[in-house]
Length: 264
Image (cartoon, rainbow, N blue to C red; front, side, top):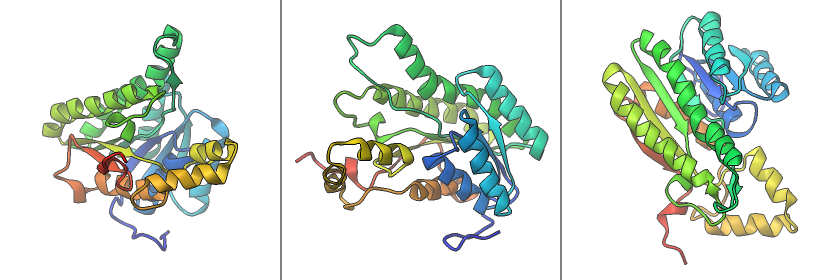
């Protein structure tokens, strides 16, 4: 199966796990990897969108499997990795996309809320790496791509502890890159800016004046538009491929120039 907007074959024969791939950026990443020739496991906690995403790929002739996965639970992560290898024989690529915005006042946030936020946005990344790395090493190497955020480097008021968690993901990425790049596993972090994902679209529509809200966001972007999930997916496919063979331990920003500008 080919895609009119891309070529097939850059990742031919590879096997990938994409977490949080039932919707939004994760779903776009899964499709792009499939178009490039990868067998894709949709590791998603919500069964309905996860099943639908896998079924859509399968209907289009791609190799896809849904495995219900809670990245905050080690047994669930281990199960996803084991089912991937059982279904496709190996694992080459891990994309840690699953995550969630958490916004609290640091002085009133409960310890339970903190633990939940860190479990979803940080611990889950580590757990997936923990169980994927041994399998990727069996293939002689591969690639891990962690989806962080521009909030890892330039955050906003009232965005605690999301920015802290995403900054930690970048730190985790650097550490794993140093430990495992000599063994053949490249580890990189991608930091998206504003992207018209399902979550952002829903949030915009919930505002008192959705059009004014969207216009304001667009005005902040040097490219004068909001990014698309497919644009993040295209970059992930490149970073995961051998075309990016000299890139590891990197914090790769794709934000339409948002963080390049001096605040006006």
